Image (cartoon, rainbow, N blue to C red):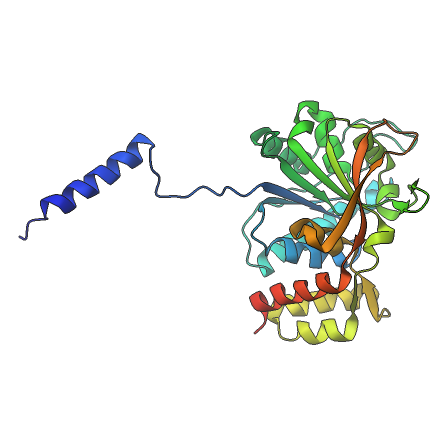
Length: 309
């Protein structure tokens, strides 16, 4: 039997000693900021494109994809269950491996107001991830629909608020007059949750208004042509568009606009503004414009490179 060289043997033994002692590790930890994406995916079709983009980037470690309700105080319709199913489908089609905790069936509080939290696996996932985060390395939570799960998580455990960097899609904002308008779909699905987050002074909060996000659109003909080269994922996305909005030649990619702005801040402009007068007086960050053509081309560059046949 051939003897192992003394120097080689020493190097191997020393490396093993470092691993056992905790001074070195055969596995490199993911040092990217953690992120949870919360989506009312069954409501419209743009959530699916936003999810596809967020699960194909290197800036954040996506630790969960959670589902959000989108029916206003009609729990029996179980909109969150429909969103949950699409979330699970997409994770498989995108070749990802991550948890998909289901969110609350109902909005926060009561129809007439209140901030009573709605407990759910999604809210608990946010709490668990925020507990591991810190003020220096925050957990990013992106709400593409009603912010029920995030607001409930903070209401259930208020001390996690400083550890979260929150992004909401919703509201409308008059950039010339500096006037808020809460009459937008996502906010109306849970006005209590939206107000709770606006009032949460320890929460770092950024908002993309609907009137800013609407600049990003996809044309059906071009989108379907690209889908044809994307296998099962492309077929799934085409089928969902046809099933829900076959009559639309163009669709506003509201949710994708926010996701693209988070991934690449150069694609959007932001300003610091005061919260609405009826809310806690503090400052939040507001997106005032987006580079829609660059967002569109970047999306297709990334997604087609990954999934086109």
